[in-house]
Length: 209
Image 1: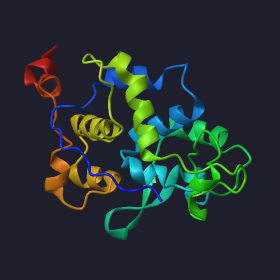
Image 2: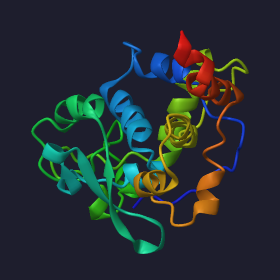
Image 3: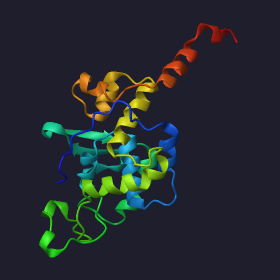
Image 4: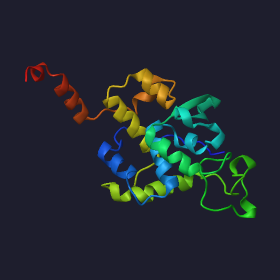
């Protein structure tokens, strides 16, 4: 299974909405990457949780998937119509096995566990390391620092954007799988611009115009 990676506690590196939209709208992406990145952003799930998904875990009709979170807790992650449109294309005629697959079959000496092999194609599960590398490489052009972004920043950004949109802490925790509101707080560092926009929206003087 995909090994869990500790999440980076970065209070300042949420990706702005316009950049997220530009990344997800790119037409030059492989279907696997397009689906993975959109699913990670829409669900605000941890990357290792999403990479551990099997086709059998998906409830496509209800736009959700069953994952095993921290401490072995089983819960559902949810996505929106963007991911829902891509998943059937990614799955194709497969009925079981890892959702996200490596590019090619593993060498005999590096055959993974049966749970990480696709019974239809013989390919292994996409690793966190490979997924992270591709995301960093493909997002360098969007990053002012030209370093590229991390998969964790999709989760961080989604939670920040939903907090800016007024989602309550219980709703954010239900989406993200956080069990402690203090641990959630580091991912909801609302921007100064969002605070200003919210105050302007609520300004009594605005109602008289």
